[in-house]
Picture 1 (cartoon, rainbow, N blue to C red):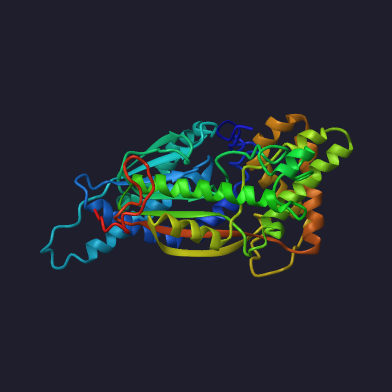
Picture 2 (cartoon, one colour):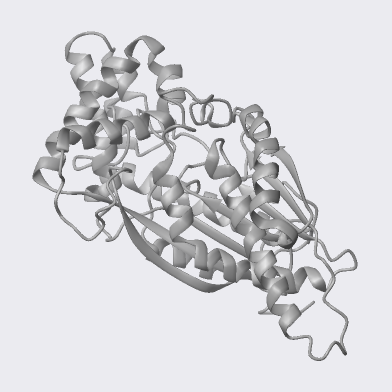
Length: 413
C-alpha cells in the first residue's frame, strides 16, 4: 500500500462516490463554524499587516464534492462579516473605510484526489456566491495544490489560515511492521502475524501493535505542526477537526468498533475463500484516532503553537441520523446501509487496490448487516476533536530543520 497513491476518496459523483456520501463531513464543518469564523477574524488581522493585505487560506485534505466549496463559502462569509463590522466602527465618515481584502484559496489533497470534479463545480459555485452574497462578496481566487500535508507545501510565512477537516487521523504511511518485521525479537523468532484478522486496533490487538500505531501518530502530527509553523505568517491560525476517541482505552474506542466490524466482514469472505487470509492479515489501515490528551501532548512538545480552543463533540455513525440527543436508532437496517455507504466512499480505493474490485459490493453489504446488528444493541457515535491553534512568533525550528527551542534560549523574532 502506498498512501500517496492509494488513499483518496471515491471519485466522481455516482452512487458510491464521496461527493454523494459526505454528509457526515458536512455536519462536522457546520458544527465547527464558530471556531472557523474566529480564526478567520484573527487571520484577517494578520494579513492586514502585510504589504499585499491578501488573506491566504489553505484547506488541507480538501477532497471533492460539495464540502470542498462549503469551506470556501464559510471563509468568504467570515471575511465579509469582518469587513461589515470594521465599517461600522468608522465614525462620522472621518476615517476611510477599511481596504477590501482579497482572499487566495489553495485546495490541497493527495494527487489521486478528484480535482477535476472540484473545478467543474467551481463555476456554478461562483454564480451562486455572487447571487447570494452580492456586494459583500470579497474578491477571491481558487487554486489546486496536490501533495501530502506531511511535506512542505508553501514558502515560509506565506499562509494566514490552515483548515483541515476529517483528515489528520490518516497517517503518512501504512505500517509494514505489523506482520513479522521490526517489532520485537520474540515475534520475529516465531514469525507470527501480530494483528491477525484485524485491519486496525481492536479488542485483541497486542500492546506492541498499539504502540506502533501511537508512535506513527506522534511522529506524523509532530511533523505536521513543524511544517505548518514554518509556512504560517506571524499569528497565523489553524482550525483542525478529525476523528479521535473519548477515553484512554484505544482498544475499545468507537472508531475501533467501526473498523472492527469491517474486519469481521472481511473475515466472512475469508471463510468463504473469496479473500486470502494472508491478504487480510497484511492489510493495515494508515489510521489512528487519538485522544484529546495525546493531541495536546504533541502540541505542547512542539512549543510552536498556542491552543486557542480544543474540544470533542460526537456525531452519529449514521450521517442521516440527526437525533443527536437521542439514544434511539429508528431503523437499524437502514442506518447500517447509510454507514456502509459513507465508509465505502472513503475507503473503497484502498480496499480495491489491496483485495480487488470484485469483492466491493458483497463486502459492504455484509458490513452494512454487521453495523445494523451493532446499532440494535447500542447507538454509537464518532468522537470528533476540534482544535484551533495560533502560531507562536518564535519558531521552535532552526532553518536547517534541527529541532530546539528558541524560547529556552531567549531568542524571539
